Image 1 (cartoon, each protein chain N blue to C red):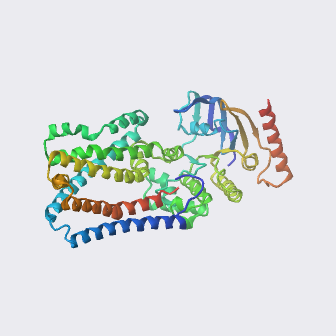
Image 2: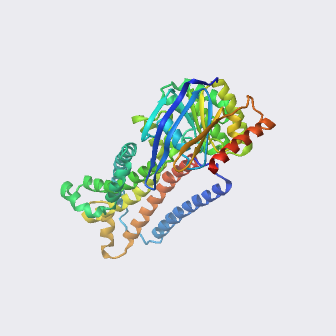
Image 3: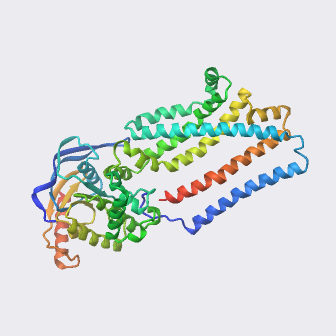
Amino acid sequence: MIRSVSHQPTRAWNHAHQKRHRRGWILITTIIIATVLFAALGDFSSVPWLTLTGAVLQTTVRLVFAYLIALSVGVAIALLVGWSPFTDALFPVFDILQNVPSFALIPFFIYFLGYTDRMIILFAVSSVLWPILFAVLAAIRNAHADLNDAATIFGARGIRRIPFYLMPLSLPAVLTGSIVGIAIGWESIIGAEIITNAAGFGSFIKDASATGVNQSAVAGMLVILLIVFTINRLVWAPLMTESAKRYAE
Amino acid sequence: MQSDPARPAVVLSRVNARFADQKRNALALKDVSLSIPAGSFVSVVGPSGAGKSTLMRVVLGLMRPESGTIVRNFSKPAMVFQNYALFPWLTALDNVAFGLRMQGVPRQERVRIALEKLREVGLESIARHYPAALSGGQRQRVGLARALAISPDLLIMDEPFSNLDTITAEALRTDLLKIWRSYGMTILMVNHLIPDAVELSDSIILMGAHPGRIVNSFDIGLPRPRDPRSPQFFREVDRITGLIRGISQT
């Protein structure tokens, strides 16, 4: 962001970007057409669409809650640690913590919280948190020394350093951390649903695939793919484009 | 603008500073003593590793020296960076207004001042642009305007021209002298080109490397305004270059 050579979005950059954008949409359209085609050919006649929709909604709602909690906690911790003089000391600690496989901890979550919605959400928080926290902390740690000095010299000192310098500085990292975090979040929630049999997409495909790959399982996977790609295209892709433009070097 | 040796802006006496990170731990400044007269324009010249940037950071209080005393007779320091160090998330205008915002100046007032400073460096038209859309020269002008906006009494510049092409750098040097004349602040500039230092400064501090230390300092004996194409100018550049060469050979 503070390199000598100005790098403006060139025609080549725009071209590559648009190509990627087009590919994304082609993928989604393909999935939709495939789903419709399967349905039209009668392959999905035995799929309980209402149950599937309900299950997907439940899983999605859990993910949204888990993401929002992980986002606020992760960003808050990362900003405070990055602001404090202990960043370098605490970084290895977080590094070890993030390496703990979250599913190894699920018995604890079940023990303390039971087979509840709250358990699944908090369990997911424990895995979504790390990529966000790390992305923000790394962005703060890797900020150019000159930029840090500029912020200090021009008055972003003390607690004001957080809202006026550290927060805007780490915005692109919040974005990339969120994308990774949400991907992990789907895994954790669906995994937790499979393990605990709580109503949701996880238990839906578990039940559906109990008798091998069948129509419901395939329909379920297509629906999840569709949701993931739609969120990516409608939410993350535009935000990433904006961030790349704004924070370009 | 009249420099007054009796009223120094910065005095360093026997300052030692250590540069330490994961990769190395070295004495960056050894026994550095200097006095910068208020209102003067002083250039710091030396090879890389001579602790020039460390000296700037110590003067500004961004880095704590290991030993020695520092007297700071300035209250509003500002800095211009080699890599511009503009905040990429802010427009040129908001970058310039950043210091005022931190001082609690109301929005209307700080926008007025920031626009005025942008006009001073000839960039009023790009006020709403983000740094990514600006050229190197424009970015450095925004960096200069950001520094001027807080009406600094000490302006520190760390190789401000080294990333710019010669024509842009020359234009910026001319503007800088104009600004220095009208503001009258003290300017401490790290420079790596002797002719630049001779054109701009009242005096030159020469630093040596490993460990970073002050080797010598010279006054520039040329009246202002200086013509960088005059024989006198070339003679002065030769004289200083000769002095530096003499020192680095011993």
